[in-house]
Length: 140
Image (cartoon, rainbow, N blue to C red):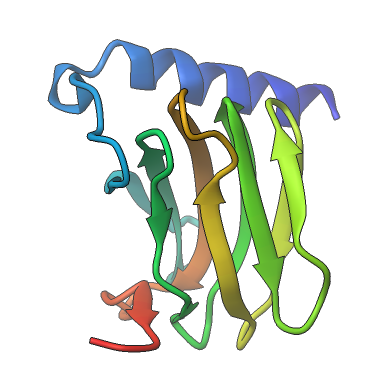
């Protein structure tokens, strides 16, 4: 648990120091940025990828699936995020709370829970190194 908290703290600290991620995300919009991508030393066919998802007030992502090999853990690092995986219930996750997506899951809802404040989550993928497309929207 401590190493997970420390890793999350270090990732969040690195994000706040990254000038390329500066600037507010507009109302109703989302921004997705890969912040790290490292092959696993024990299995170079797998990689660990960190993706920052930022939502402006009222922002959302279209429903989607991820690479077939992707196991994902997502932690809210600012604000609150609404999420629904597969046919499960929609839930709101707040700062420090996490959820997981298994390979093949459908992410039906991913949205800022607020119409007035931004939100952010850090999604960490364990994925086949050759998988370059991490997210595929249901509709183009």
